[in-house]
Image (cartoon, rainbow, N blue to C red; front, side, top):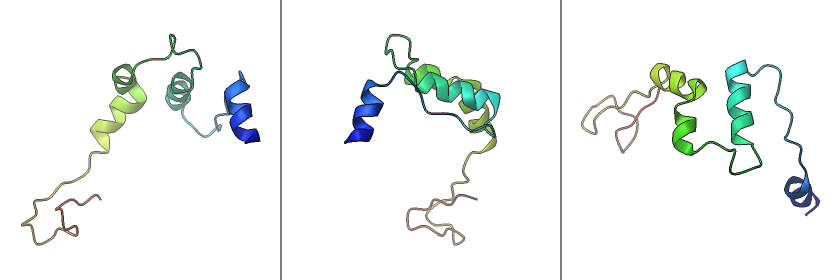
Length: 79
């Protein structure tokens, strides 16, 4: 209960670890913006370089259900 009270009434955001990239820190800061009128929309956040650049380099490999190399009953396999 104390944690919920602190989160709801505090103006602070949690510290962001130093090992997170500058783009990652900026993205997290935008997500944690307390004032909803200043917080970006989900669509805007999807265009942020931290997300946009990751989507191009970390896309999962999807195999068909009939592929004998598939390890999932749904045909999905991530490497």
